[in-house]
Length: 92
Length: 113
Image (cartoon, rainbow over all chains, first blue to last red; front, side, top):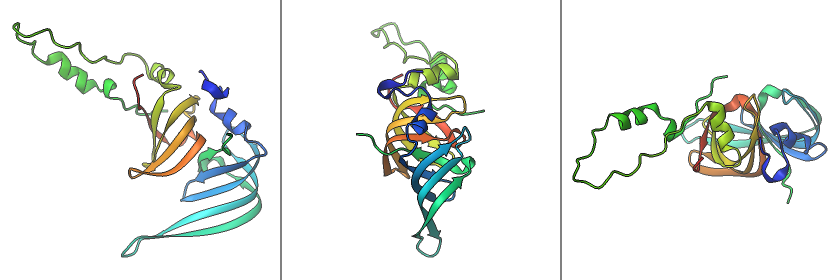
């Protein structure tokens, strides 16, 4: 399949080109994180370092309020089946 | 893997309706040509939309609109110039985005294939 301008032949190329870069990861359970990508595999299991996780907590009360919790981790293994989206840093 | 591909020109009901509509009266100018009907396998459709604007809907209901750079057999998707839409509002933008295939509900062509 044609990779248009960026020279990408398959979706995993996008991830390969992001190794050692800070990536944004959207996960199941209203979680997002950014971290430096050290390794990945075909399941999209990820090894991230210097991670900041953001958890959106929806409070379904009278008026639904969204609160945000953040936490930091030095080194993290992310199981692939929780991954929805990975976005590399914008290369401009 | 079963994935619904939503596209107006793939709608079998619409084409069935077109086939059964009565012929126009003779005294009118010739009817406009029927809209192009899409023939081909799902794979042909996907090959046709690479490089085009698409809307990817996930099982969660979130939409991603962007240019489809490529996809693989798991339906993992690479998108460019991606906008994330939740309930009709843009909630995020990504220069590039990798979407893990298991989350994909459909891929819709957002421009002529």
